[in-house]
Length: 118
Length: 112
Image (cartoon, rainbow over all chains, first blue to last red; front, side):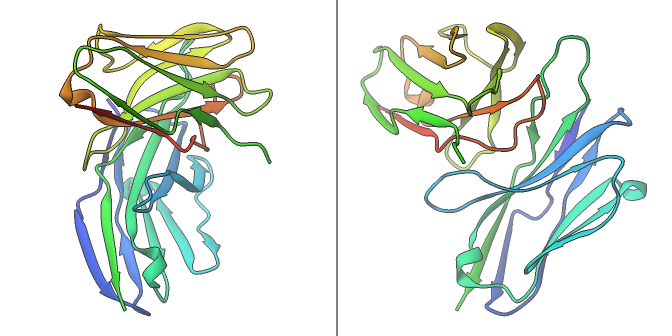
């Protein structure tokens, strides 16, 4: 069965610090997708990134970067020079490949609450 | 670009009442997913539809039903509401059963 573990429940940093949010996943499939979402206090789920299991290249987008390691089943997210506006709950999610007529539903981790202090 | 639309954004109901949540997917998307997120919880998959047929079912109570219409919008009907149904309800859409990337803004349901 598929599972996503975000062991860090809460992280508190001071502005301009770098912070890494951990995500470990379990799946029996060789084809799957991994996602990160940001949920600010306003409640919406903001899509950050999607990776498929065949693309292990790390990605950087501005202050955000992602490290995908299939060998350790991890998909970690780093924010460089954190800002107060980065304060939110961050969810990692997994979607397995289509099986029969099934849809590609997402399974979420329990989330990490990031608090960035000024 | 057009996004997923949900209505209403906020809904307040009494216990044992009925609620209907609506989801309008991104144009040309034929797959809809519904999620429920309780306070302090991660989003939990409820149900999904592909081409107007139910595809997957998650932890959706029997008091809830949903359908997808010919224009691909979807409605989640919730009856005999309980206090524990108070949550954020998200809808997401995709093409051809693919994983959803974008979610709607959510409907915040409060049951009093």
